[in-house]
Length: 122
Image 1 (cartoon, rainbow, N blue to C red):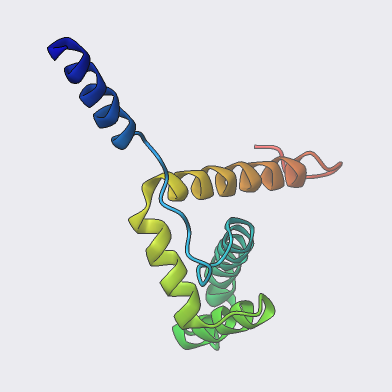
Image 2 (cartoon, rainbow, N blue to C red):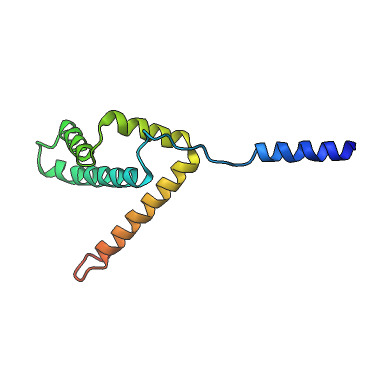
């Protein structure tokens, strides 16, 4: 009887400690939306870095305006984006999925860019 009680308690304990993911609140941006927004922000940042050496009107303020335009394009605002971004950072399981898919998409875009005829081949 003692063995039976210990085994039941062990099963309950193991089930309670199962690696279940926390459910994502509804006000948090979806994985797909975050991926698109982060990719567009990265592209804008890269373009801004190149352009600021050619044109002195590209200041950090102009970069923030571009960021706001990107967020508006994706129908969100700064507050909602950062709330979602902070949530993803606080949940490593969701964050790793997001960052892995973002990295894979960026690599595919980079490969497509350099596989075009006449493209620069390092």
